[in-house]
Image (cartoon, rainbow, N blue to C red; front, top):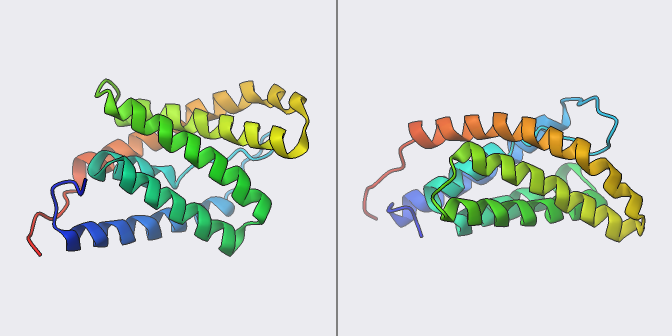
Length: 171
């Protein structure tokens, strides 16, 4: 699905979305988040993911998320951070797409579920990498942080979905 827009508008939107998500990922590395649990982030790039999911569909959101994870890991991450980010992103985008598909959730509700599932994906990856099941004890704090950040990201994503109009011109 291209969101009812021309191929040129679609490709342009995808490029801008991937660049915006990457830029927000970088900005996020500059913001210290004082938490007792490692890996807590604001999830700013997910503003773009929510926008793309609601404007262009799950395939586009998955592509933007994959590009962001790959480039962010190459530019300012590590192989380990790539594994955590990818696990979180796959679970997050999958759940967000499923919930959006029901047409019963707002962008904010979808974002909250995505934020929480991103944290679940990271915990599962950490357990697989380390073999330490006790890491799951961090999940309650990560769920709370996902709820808070998911609401903020969802509100921002909702605003973009309402305000940004994608071009309808023909190629």
